[in-house]
Image (tube, rainbow over all chains, first blue to last red; front, side):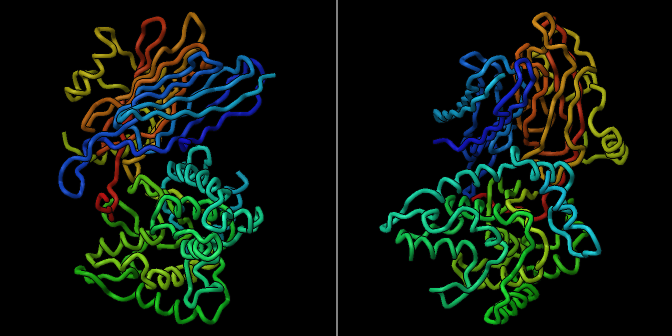
Amino acid sequence: MANVLINAPKTARKGETIEVKALILHPMETGFRPGTNGTMIPRNIIQDFIATWNGIEIFRMRMSPAIAANPYVSFFTVASESGTIRFRWSGDNDFSAEGSVTVAVT
Amino acid sequence: MVFLASFAAAQGGAEDRRSGYQDMGAALQKMQDDDTANPAMLFVQAGEALWKQKAGASDKACADCHAAGSMKGVAARYPAFTPGSDRPVDLDGRINLCRTTQQKAPAFGPESQELLQLSAYLALQSRGLPIAPPDDARLTPVRAEGEQLFKGRQGQLNLSCADCHDDNAGKSLGGATIPQAHPTGYPIYRLEWQTLGSLKRRLRNCMIGMRAEPFAYDAPEYVALEAYLMQRAKGMTMDAPAVRP
Amino acid sequence: MSSLPTRRHFLVAAATVTVIPFAPALATPESLAAAIKEVVGEVEVRSGRVKLDIPPLIENGNAVPLTVSVESPMTDADHVKAIHVFNEKNPQPHVFNAWLGPRNGRAVVGTRIKLADTQKVVAIAETSTGQFWSASADVIVTIAACVEDVK
């Protein structure tokens, strides 16, 4: 299981704008840092972060090496109907991770 | 928010001692205070899973012996003497004693992810509590040894810990404020490391900075230094797992 | 351009806390200007509507919190389509691109970024009506006194 930490309200009123925050464990190695032997440590970053609500994309981010290690992303979304917000991270070296939260909309 | 208020209150008054938290700018304080943003919480979450996971020949999890909530205050107390050890151990050492004697599993390596995760999970349960070193006479010589190590010059720069953290704390070294070196927040998510690290790693860091050779990871000197630092910070509020620059 | 902030630089950054009007592309280093041009093309980038919250001074450039907020009704007809963030002095000018829509309700994105040095950060919002709005901020990055070798 990927080490991800997602925060979103468990319940929301229909039409309410809620904040969603997601953290994931990842080194975000820039490719611009020399290692102890003087050669560059190869780049290893997350490139894409995609959030969907019941399968429909609600947010997408393209990351660069300038995103801090253990990337944190926060954004807002309108609570449309009860369901699952699913998050997908993908990047270098076939990195791929998922996380999700459920929100009950009343 | 409750934590914030109590933390601020606990840090007020005529206290001359300052935690590293107080020396940070508002942006980093906010990063630490928000559990949904504090990157150390990733390690806490993993530590909680590890706490509940059965391990070793005993096939027991930490949670099988220790009831939920029973670890409150534990991280604020170590290093301490513990049954089964003739010398004091720090929290990481205590975790590993449980591993080897109770779970009958191999000890976690120094600075391993597992050890950091478990110690972060335990440290969080002491957040907001005062540092409370045990009232144990056997610790007196250990603390004295730690004090000597803290005040003794070492390394090619011929510096002592005290030169910076007692005599020049609050002043600037380069662009950074020299902290008083109170271990209120360990394990810390240090931005310089871009990950979580123990007090031991921080001490090694300082020794390398003084161009001294760090003690081996299992050296009793670290425990002595930690015992002294915890006594020196007695009563200060734990803010682990902290964020530091 | 010197990497050391002048006193005036610092006072301006400290006083305004977040926003310094976007300087014309001509005044920015070439790679930053080129990266911005890739996104905006020939369309005029206007200063305003975008708020860039980033500390004017940070103790370590490895994780600088940043929030971009854009004034927008976020309706089907008029919303922020994307937010692009750039920097001036990292090895590469790109920081991130985020794509949004009416379902976001508010055009606000937060993250943490790496800044290799004291420098300018630029945020540009692209609206569904084809406009580009921007804000920029100067961040002073102090270097940690005691660094540790890469493991």
